[in-house]
Length: 117
Image (cartoon, rainbow, N blue to C red; front, side, top):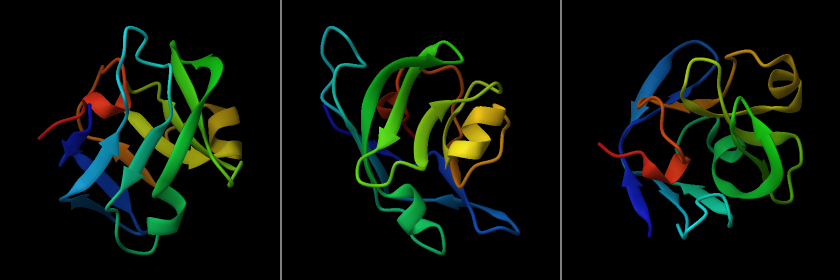
């Protein structure tokens, strides 16, 4: 079931901006991590880093499913230590820090497609 999200912020390297119309879509079944997640609607300098399809890796990161961007293996959709979903690089994922290109405003969600306004 696709979820229209309005609660993501995107950074441009200097400031964070609330982005309206960001979509995070997934087919949510009995296991919420069973399929890919598609992020679209992000604009600005980090749009190419964030927009795209992320496939589940079968691994957990901070207790939630870890997703890797299809055709761009240095990009990850991961659950952070501050309880939000974020899109970041491999080095930031491996460091388990809170550096990212975009993150959900809502906290403590089981799946990134559950974000809402």
